[in-house]
Amino acid sequence: MEELVKEIKKLEVLLDNNLGMLKDKVDYIISNKISDKKEIEFTLDNILDLVYWYGENIKELYYSLLEYYKTINLNNARDYENIYLDIIEGCDDND
Image (cartoon, rainbow, N blue to C red; front, side, top):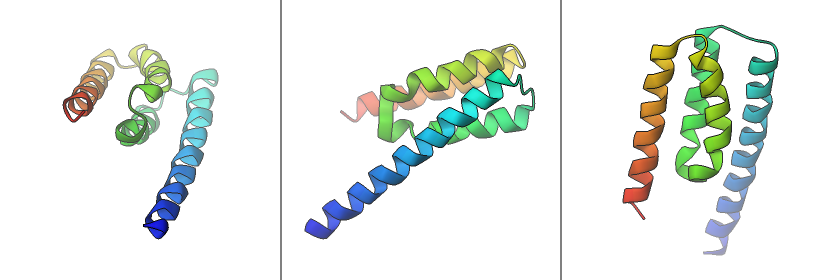
């Protein structure tokens, strides 16, 4: 059991580091007005990967990039919003 706790703590550190890098990436995309759809969608996908771990706590980061993306590609941004809402709803169902 002690080994499992150690591994979970390592995972938490890795996830927190990844979250920090994603925050920097979102700031970079928005502040530099990056319009590359693939880069934005890749970043949104990476944030979505963390939704199950962070839940609603990652919402602000996700939506800041999503709102920016709406100015570039509204239809794709709406799809990403629906994906996020589906994931959050699924997380709520598991509680």
